[in-house]
Image (cartoon, rainbow, N blue to C red):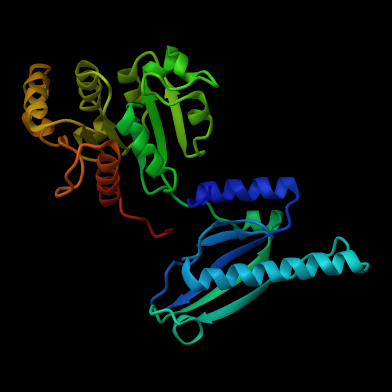
Length: 307
């Protein structure tokens, strides 16, 4: 699977370097005008694989071809002479997208080709997450959301009480209750962390400040306990964090009454997003809900300058 998030791509780069895989880091060094990706977008290229993307299309195809040609020539030179161990040279190449590649963007992209080594990793800056999310619920909708977030630079705490003592969390078991298997959890990217717990509501206190919170567990009473705990957080009371609750307008009305009975002010309860997701997207299939909700999260947390 192609590593599309910066976090996953950086991890792939570390693994390739540890494995001794000869490779090049292709980076968007400079852009002028309309271009498919921003500066610092990267991809990894070796002789039989490419990870990440610098924008796709003809530009990326040409960049991969140039990188592999350089890797082949370096390997052939090392094998036929005394160049063994000699470092592959770095270079840059300027692409005029319209005249050179026939792309309608019409801008100019300068690509840097650098050998994958410890220096390249040191110069590879960490990208600030678009958002930090506490995702309560590992059922079908939660799993569909996680699939989409796997390729987005964010930080996720994925919380579900059932994973604390369920046999589904054991490696090799098949999902018979709709929960992720041990294999599924082991394959999560590094920016998504699964938190089995005995008390999901208690985990609310440990969420990073100004996080986004999605509540979609398997029980309405558990949803209520989590939302109750969330509304007692200072960042939420001050409007610096966001709470989304899966459910219908009927569920919202019921929760409004129950939360008021627990002492929460109506204006605070009104900040809860329920139903969740972007308006106009119709469908109750988990994947459809996930697309709508992840779109909503991205609207709530636009990219920082580092993106």
